[in-house]
Length: 227
Ligand code: ADP
Ligand code: ADP
Image (cartoon, rainbow, N blue to C red; front, side):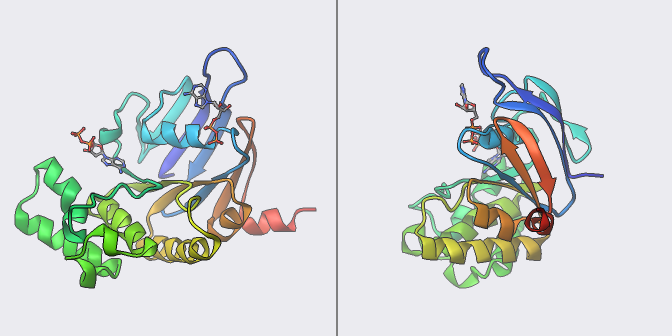
């Protein structure tokens, strides 16, 4: 069973050309799926429909076997990793990672502590738990943001152009880091970018969108090899 099934998804804003036009994509369990295309091709809109931040005009969104068309974001159990990381500057790394668990009020302090320490070991943040985001590198901040997603046992990570504000050098480092972590965690990932290099180096498969239409869905190798 696919982790995320998009079936004939349409998004129509007003009466123009649909922003997303009959797109069907299955994302396999543990797969790293890229949504790529030029500005305005509909990739962010599609991602927002997966998360539930945007209503679907027609089609079905199925996550972990459940149809979620009418479900609120909080009931979809997905983790959006935001471009600006959305970390709290006044909280330590530990408290930033613990934050979603404290918010849900369903966990004892002991459970929270276990989960935060597990996640920070995985992410190699254990030595930075008492620091504040302002004192961390870009890569470390990205890992804190992912830590927050991990402790929630999210079914998938969703990234919307997470590297687009970084300089070229840091972008390269972060790309390597995201790839390494995703493979280590084995968590299903959907990643939006307009950057060809990111698409070809990160993705298990790449979905190419143009004017809301799915043009191609292939592995990077298949895309390279094509005439
Ligand atoms: P991308 O992420 O590929 O740059 P978007 O998904 O943001 O593209 O946008 C796809 C199309 O939908 C664009 O033509 C954009 O102008 C339009 N669009 C996006 N959001 C809205 C909105 N809230 N209202 C009306 N049109 C929108
Ligand atoms: P509230 O319950 O007060 O509205 P939030 O708006 O912070 O709190 O979060 C609402 C729900 O959205 C959370 O319970 C959680 O499941 C989900 N959520 C929080 N952060 C994220 C995120 N980064 N990506 C996806 N879902 C999230």
